[in-house]
Length: 556
Figure 1 (cartoon, rainbow, N blue to C red):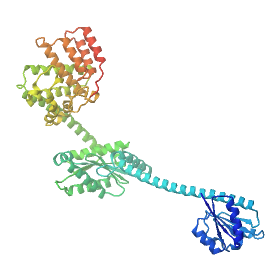
Figure 2 (figure 1 turned 90 degrees about the horizontal axis):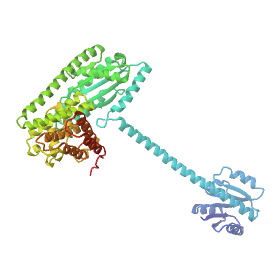
Figure 3 (figure 1 turned 90 degrees about the vertical axis):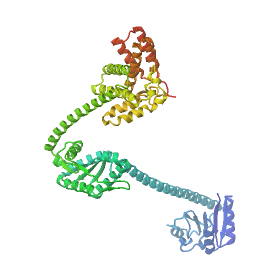
């Protein structure tokens, strides 16, 4: 990189001599000459000067008037008597400078020029580094601000409910603990309102989830617009909301709750499709009034008060009290026991009614099949030590499966094969039909899930979802194996058309595709222990070893 040197001297011959000496020291120097102060200023304006070699006679009284930059080095050539004066004049200049005796030899002059230029280069490099550092610092500061902004945004996403914009349930747990600690620290009150939309399930079912979401958003808006800034509002889940009221007594909380309830009830919830009156029920609890021992207990108290408000007719606010809680708990327990008994009786009667309805659709063989399959289910349940409710659910699922097949009155469904796993592909819509039929009975929800997955195969080749292995519910695996085993057992008992050995080979074949091998091994152990069929013990052991070696096939 070339260096531009301006030699300013009143004597042109001396300027020429200085130029030759400076130029001879480096081939990369461009030498410019000036013989007046105005000429100096002109050259400085037109060129990026690296060094100004200035004779003292051309030096202005105010050297700063030359407007030298920090990247320009200055050497003043002065008589020995002037050196100290010019040294003082140069003090304070931003540019790198030096004063040399004008009679100095060429070697000394070139040495001082080299040192000054080297120092200037270092200073310029340092200046560049400082600028780069400043730019990087600005970028870092900007990035930090962006990260803080993004973190704030992510915190909002983490803390906020995506539908209503209120704080979510995750943040509620953190906020409740903090507010309780603050209230105890400052010996102040904290009240909690637990709100729930009355008949929200019916609103969703009758008007659709879109309108249900509209109702939740509108309620959130009415809550925030009718509470003070210090109140914290949360979407708790479903149609439930929570409001934390710091420094608010239970009496004041009750007034706030009544106002919120009235604001929700007085104006219809109206969108482009539906217009409904919607009400809310509110349970209220507080630290001083309710005396909870933990944050969870405070929420539980508000929850009990909410249940009481619901039980008393909805669209009301109830404050938690221990006396009401005891009365309410007793009433609720009695009601729960009564409803449970009624539900079990209703479920049993429904099963019996379906069996009666299908009695004439299936023959005696079909009824034997049901009894045999239920017997196998009982054996498996005993071995697995399943509870009575689970056993009854499996009974119900199997009975519903077989009886509802008859109701569908489909020739393909009634077709019998050696293994039910080889059913025609036309039956692939059967799980959906069974689910649709059981939707008429809300209390068959557990059975419905088992029915939906009963045609799934252990190797993943079943339907409707293509589940495999442990993805299939255990209940579905049990009734599938019991149903198939009942078919095999009845085939053996019917005119010896299927030998016990053939039955075992069919089990091995099915275990490699359709059934859980471990469940088949368990069934073999039951057969051996109960001596259900005339089978050689060694054959059973050999079959068991084959099953233990089976790997679940990879789904293609």
